Image 1: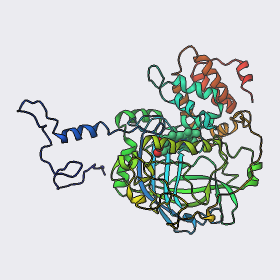
Image 2: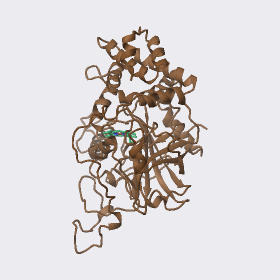
Image 3: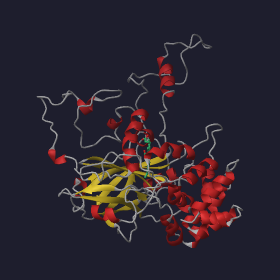
Image 4: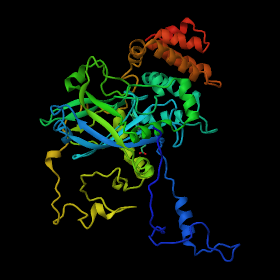
Length: 504
Ligand code: HEM
């Protein structure tokens, strides 16, 4: 079925934005048929003034995206892990808003570009809104928030000529070897999914769950697509970027409009605090996965998307997700990237949407909220009315509830320093090597190698050889065969010193 973008029919008279009906919308009021135009035509002023204020800052990353509402249903009992009310019994449901996005492109860029895909979910739960702001990949390029702006700069545009630059991207990746795992996923065909319905979603970070006995477990979230994984090859993705830059948006809208509601199954992986101390990988390092053999997937529930928002700008553009929006029973972990993200999202949204972004329909907790923050641009009275605006007070009965006291724990060390992200966690190669040799089939491997060659061939300038050689060493360390194939494709002659240098 072809998706028909239609408008709602209205028959009421045209009005100004203050509600006064008016007649002439085509022509300005002038002195005589040839003008000049009169200042008293305030409709003209209102139209032009509102028009030049239509744009708000786009998201600094993940600017281009698509959103839909839906429903989450709990299908399996996980009360032994979490006291979150949503999971209190199987069959519980809650409304959800999802936003999928590309990362590096600007708003309006092509949505089949090679890029990770954002997979952001807002669960409107009785405990408050719970946001899981993940990607379609289980890992990320870096493991410390301090590096995020540098990383993003290298993936966006050059300062001088405002062009995307393979030189800049590979320079950053080659100097930050912890990126290798995610680079291999990005350069495989998973970097160009067929729309948003055919990809998995991941919370990526390690979170914690706290149960009714106040026991804490470490958790990872996985949403596995029920539509099956489908990817474009590099050539197909390039063609789709030209033929239909809005392919993913259209695909989601058409599927939902046709009643073909996309679904994902939520699984968690669970690790005890004791297991975390002895696992061979740092469980709080977002460049690493927890192997499913070590920590099997536990089925939890079903996500279904079934409603395209009635207005894109109001709901999708103004959606504000934050990894800090966690709820009683689901909490943080010491993952350094996650900790950095806790600050950044609300900060971005106060700038992008204003101090009262949480009052917008898509962001507002439908179960209400009670605090003493007041006023600011675009405050609406429905939220606060004439309630007291300070605490404590003698008039309302709002009280902090000890049942929601946050989880108390001892930190492992009192030693404060800057911990080198690569010396303290330095195996960047084993997991990417296994991804190549065990998880990928021969076609995946062949496409990965070709995609890397295509991308690295664009590295240019006086630093080309240095960047290429440094990155090749990372490939050699992960898997010699992969490295040799890429080197051959790039016509680099390998000498034994390079191979020796690249030994782990
Ligand atoms: C420390 C590292 C990071 C920082 C500082 C950061 C910062 C940001 C900021 C400022 C935004 C725009 C928010 C807005 O304007 O509403 C954003 C969007 C987003 N980020 Fe991150 N990010 C980081 C890492 C990550 C990671 C590791 C993931 C995934 C695992 C991720 C997934 C997303 C997604 C999905 C969005 C789009 C949310 C939406 O659809 O509105 N980010 N990020």
